[in-house]
Image 1 (cartoon, rainbow, N blue to C red):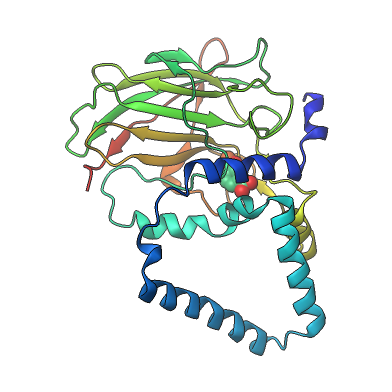
Image 2: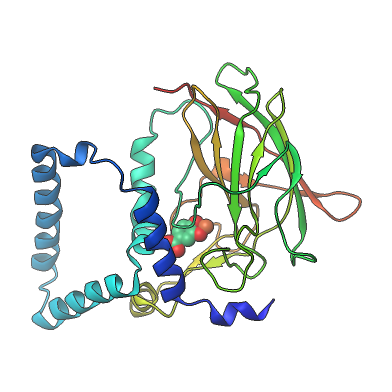
Amino acid sequence: MSETITTATAADSGASATERFLADKTGGTGPGADTTRVNTLATEVITAVHQVIRRHHVSYEEYNALKSWLISVGQDGEWPLFLDVWIEHVVEEVAHASRKGSKGTIEGPYYVPGSPARPSVATLPMRENEAGTPLRFKGQVTDISGQPLAGALLEMWQADDDGLYAQFAPGIPEWNLRGSIVADAEGRFEVTTVQPAPYQIPTDGSCGKLIAAAGWHAWRPAHLHLKVSAPGHEPLTTQLYFKGGEHIEDDIASAVKPELVLDPRPAADGTGEVTYDFVLDPAS
Ligand code: DHB
Ligand code: FE
């Protein structure tokens, strides 16, 4: 464990996650701009809140606690974290219900586009003596008929052995454990990295306060993040977990699916080795 863990705060990761979201995700208006749709969704959300208030006889004291908490989520920059932990998994489930290829899961707040390009057999950018068990992760990207997707792109990002993400926690090189791997002519890739540690969502901000107040825990199981893409195909945003890993059964972000669990086997040199293939749907 390095000392950086004590200096990663909710304010650091929250501000960066908010900035990232505003830079990448707020370009278009999309169907959300349709008045009928906004009316339906906003009315139903507000009505659902009314029902909770009536059912549980919510007091003025509780109403003001909520108001103050909502204000602090904004002040801490924790809206991206809150939404990606407690809401995104259902959006992902609905969006991809009819997908035929590989299962995906939530993106979370820590994707950064434009990570350094690497060939099909590569090591993710990392520090000298990067802590953690080495992991070799290989496989093939195909379409739903099994045809290899030559030159498919695998963007990977992950936490380090302290559970911290480059660009969202201080003191980590910019592109540490982030890379864009280009698969070979047969869609194959072989990436060497280190096994990430479980990730704890920041406990010193408003999301942490909610977790403590409700008696929940703040953990996500260790995971690799990936975006797999190829021209003419639906990009896949996914995460891969580790069999038997802590919090596999009680991920705070509810993003684990049985199809996404890896079981690396130690090679002669102690490196964990695992094969995982990706199947992309045709673009719709
Ligand atoms: C959050 C962090 C993650 O690493 C992730 O995969 C999903 C959500 C979060 O802090 O909101
Ligand atoms: Fe993550």
